[in-house]
Length: 361
Ligand code: PMP
Image (cartoon, rainbow, N blue to C red; front, side):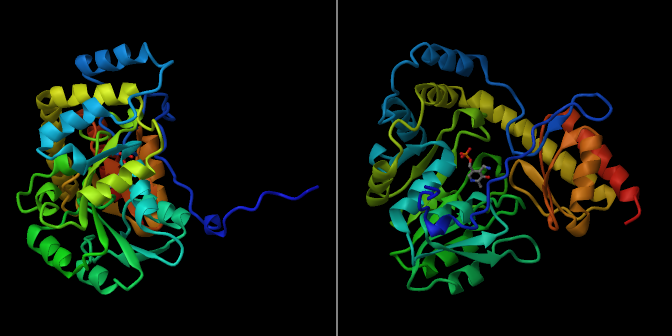
């Protein structure tokens, strides 16, 4: 027969995740730099690579499903009991588990928009309804509007701090005031994928905020500052009931032994990794400063990327940057997000941005 399997109606219209384009040879034949996925531009540290290679010798075996070594290392590093930790296949995997644990058809999930593009995708897949609250004119979360959007059906709220793709971060007072307005039976997920790049001391650390708030959990990743994007390992810090729910919803063996061991080695080499982050933060300041000198409006960023609101000129800008040898991330009709990379890559981007400003609109 030509019958086809019945698929869940919730999947209709789910937007597909668009990964950043890889770098490729540019028109001029030169190498191009990938500044489209907020990755760490630096290759693995030798010690981290060694751990991964050593673990790869046993990939005929399943990994340690409980991530025992990694959980112990995280517990020590972040001073939290292991009962409040959960690991997963990238922090996006953990975010999906959080949805599975809290929301389904008829429920609502609130997040700012624009924000991390996986939020609407994983929300719709869960069957819940995505409630997008527009950012303010200064590209920040509109926390008052987000609190006003809470209904009896709200189950989860994503707060992306700093926000992807705008880089804007929420200050302590505003975030605390917001958390005070959220009912205790609604889970707030503080997505801190870019936490290690934050330098403004007024941006609170979620690990402090979650402590006295059983409905708050923190999402972190090894993909950005720690440079393990390709290995897929993220984690959440949450109060026991939520952490236990995360362990139930985990894909069995979802974090490979290679990823676990590389993550443990990264924590052991954290000083060296954070020095690299320091260099990227300095580059972020240089890039932002130069862009302002060129005449761009650059929202203050606390992450490893900058945001240029280009509206209708977005795709033209992305094409021009690509011709100049840098692949950026266009959000058509809105703007481009450009990852801070190694200095050579940032120089090429700055040149492209300067050239583009000279072009007639
Ligand atoms: N949260 C935010 C805000 C992100 O920008 C990203 C990566 N783009 C993630 C989570 C997911 O990262 P990963 O799954 O690699 O941990």
